Amino acid sequence: MKEIKDMKRVLLKLSGEALAGEKKTGFDEATVLEVAGQIKEITKDGLQVAIVIGGGNFWRGRTSGNMERTHADQIGMLATVMNCIYVSEMLRSVGLKTKVFTPFVCGAFTELFSKDAAVEALEAGYITFFAGGTGHPYFSTDTTTSLMAIEIEADAILLAKAIDGVYDSDPKLNENAVKYDSISLDEVLEKKLAVVDLTATIMCLENKMPMIVFGLGEENSIVNTVKGQFNGTYVTV
Image (cartoon, rainbow, N blue to C red):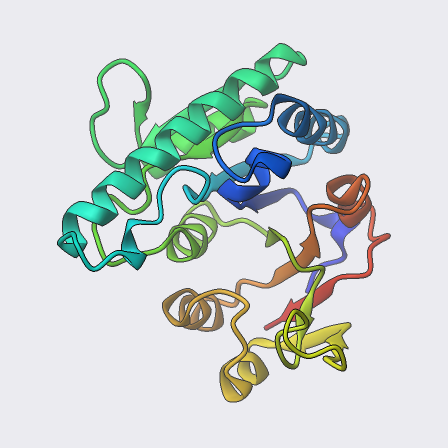
């Protein structure tokens, strides 16, 4: 893996739940503004940042047995569009330039994704959001994250999670769970560790896309991660 200080372009994955703060649903403006301030800080020296956001603060229809999966996933895609538009505006409020791309036409709210347009935006200093998932059902925002990171040729994925790294078992269920400082994608697959979903893991492995996993809830976590001063997990290729 490249040293973080040598990276030119990263893709930051944020969970939708993280945007809700303690409310657990919708948006918490203070939480989002704190994230916005950190993103402004890490881009001061020219780091290019793309962002994917989950939709869990609005929709988890996949857990319901009362709706056909395709339509449930479509609602989830729209939840990610709302999240990206909101966070985009919060970033603009702290002085950053942003663009929101979707894989489908979304009126005048977003721009239609193409690799050339996204890379051009990143190189022009825009924080670039990829909303709407892949545009197809049966794919998670984990898969979107891997796909977009590979397509824009990011140096790494920054995976901001509720848990502060990769453990050998669920630390919420096992108080003796051991956290890895570093682990390879091969080991993640072999040990069946749920860093991201299986499709996303295989895509990262095949395309040599490393991940840096850290806890978003820790103070200044995004800035510290980019500076290499974090206690999360490097997921290497």
